[in-house]
Amino acid sequence: MVGMTSTPARRPATTPQGGASRHSAPSSRLAPEIAARLKRSADGLLPAIAQQYDTGEVLMLGWMDDEALHRTLTTGRCTYWSRSRQEYWVKGDTSGHFQWVKSVALDCDADTVLVKVDQVGAACHTGARTCFDADVLLKDGGCDPAPTDQ
Image (cartoon, rainbow, N blue to C red; front, side, top):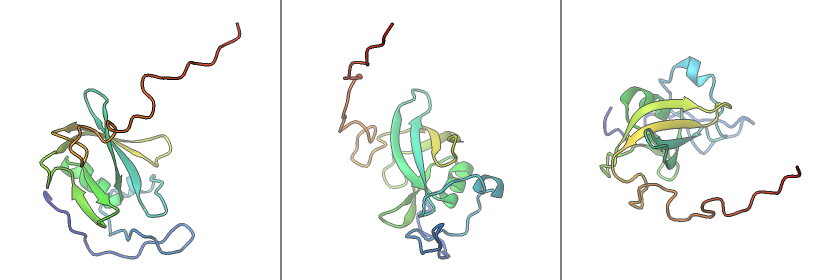
């Protein structure tokens, strides 16, 4: 559903230790065979890395729960869970900076999602192309590699 950012009815989520979670996961339509493989945080979330599909440029990191992943897989647009606003948001609905999904993959531990997208406009909420342009800590491998004994 395009433009959906409201939160559906929720049920209380619990942490693996049985305590209440900050993220109350809604009922999800995610395929059970995918959901069973996911290793989520105590809040029921997975980090989702958005990467430009044709250049490999890392664009941003967002968070997905099962329902956000389901929406991403079925709509062709990235849907994330906003931890600060406690609601879903579809990239581009308010900014016009859309992420058109090309592929979705789990990492080897099934605890991170890689979404390859065709990014239209800025990926970062600051207006920058990526969220990783402003604060580069090391550029071009500034350290000399350790010498090897031969």
